[in-house]
Amino acid sequence: MEFILLIAISLIPAIVAASLPFYSKTEVTKALSLFLMFLCLWQIDIAFLYAYEFFSETLIGTVFRLFRIGPIMIMPLMYYFGYYLVKNNPEVKGYKWFFNRTGFYVLLSFSIIVYLVNFTNLGVTGYTVVPETDIAPQHLIPIYGTLNSTFLINILLVFINTFFLLNVTVKLNDHYFKVFYTKLAFGAVFVFLNGIISGFGVLPLYFSSFNSILVAILLFLGFFEMQSNKLNDANTRLSKQSSLLETIMNINPNYLVVLNKDHHMIRLNDSICHLLSIKKEDMLCKDFSKLKQDFALMIEDNSLQRIMRPTGEVHFVQWGFKDLELNDEENYTLFYGVDFTNQKENEELLLSTEKTKVVGELAASIAHEIRNPLTTVRGFIQLLSERNINSEHEHIILDEIDRIDEVLKELLLLAKPEAAISQTNPDDLKIDVMQEISNVKLLFEPVAHEQNKQISIINKLPDHTFTKMQKSHFKQVMINTVKNSLEALSTNGCIKIKIDAFEECVRIRIIDNGKGISRKRMSRIGEPYFTNKEKGTGIGLAICFKLIKDYEGKMTVKSKQGWGTTVTVLLPKSERLAGDQERKHGDGAPVPF
Image (cartoon, rainbow, N blue to C red):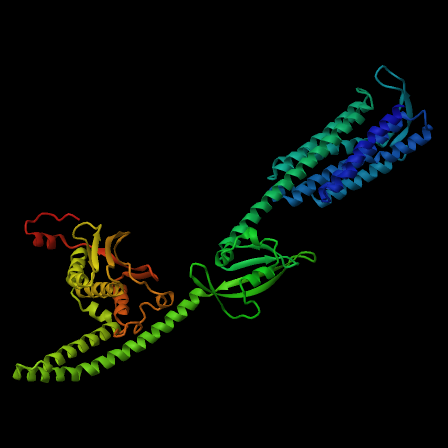
């Protein structure tokens, strides 16, 4: 009865060993399974010492010698665990002098010799019966031969290997390996100490079988915990990596869609959702043909497609495909779009700049050629007008010649406005913004009043706020802008000129509630010689843009047809010298800013 119970108990480590490969197939798993199998054989070896009621002493002796491979081969296996750790963990490479391939084969050879000696009378000579006691049934114990010392040396080497294994384990960086191998080392020491104590009769022989069950279960749980923790760590790393890749995909300025082998959309980045004004959740798992048809995507050729967003923003995109082959079962396709909008705008800007340069140079040349004879004509007509006091025709001709001269001046300013700036005295480049705008308002008030239109100024600037710009140029920009707004107003219309500070600049906004500008015309605002006025030259607003830019400012136009137009001018702030202000006020008192 005791024999059957011990056989059943001894099979538990074997069952645990057989289950491990289902969780993992690594070298550690195989070595641990082998350790548990040897532990099982060791316990079967002990169980057969209680089988005298079932088998002859000769058969028991043969089986005992055969299954003694269990306790003998655990020694080189414990060495292998240390060798594996040293080989695969750089932080414990210093133990290579002890744990190495040569050492493993030497110890394995020694254990094989011990096992072979075991089959001779030098290892085991016979068996003797131990009578029944209160805590132990009757059983056999072996009588060892003269070379049984090799077996004892083998056991001693188990403790030595385990000691060095513990030293290696505490130096591991991997926390989960450290915990598991510590349990393995202490489990091996516990089993062998228990075996020695039982072998010398201090405890019943079968006690080692019960302890082996405990060790097998602890090792299994320890291994399972290590694998679970490593799996959780791997999942966490994968989750972080996936999140990182998702973030990289979303901040990618290119337009990306990932398709599976069935051409269903499984990933879309934020860029394409923004471009097409779609939601990811509405597109995921949908067939790609839906996206292609809904937005008429031109993916057959490499031409640029013009796409207009609901806001009116225009993009130029080139579409393409890339196959992503991860393995034989997982094939994906990356649909991508490269935005060439900036490049397109730069090309158009470069072309426009070249055209403007050529036209400007031509205009300057023509202006010079016309002004020279025009000056002569004006001089002679003025002489005629002085001789003929009552004639009005000469005055009309002179006025028209002066108008032609003003147009020619504008042409020259458009061609090279920076020349006029460079020739200006720096002291003349500081103007009082509110004062100059008030002068412009004063200039237009009679016309506005006559046409039942209003011009108002809303000033939020401190007194005497200055900007760096030539007075005549500033007036030219303001007059041109207000004049355009006034012409766009219907009866009872209103122009508001708002002045305030914006960051480090003076901001001037000319706001009208006129008829507004169409989207088509807005795209050409500021182009030289573009106008929809019957008698316009198309260079007034172009000069305004150029002047503001040359003074390191910025001019923008926003308009909506039927609602009105807002022209915003930003110019850097500038402060007058204290001496200038003292001279202006005369009392030497500081001027508040």
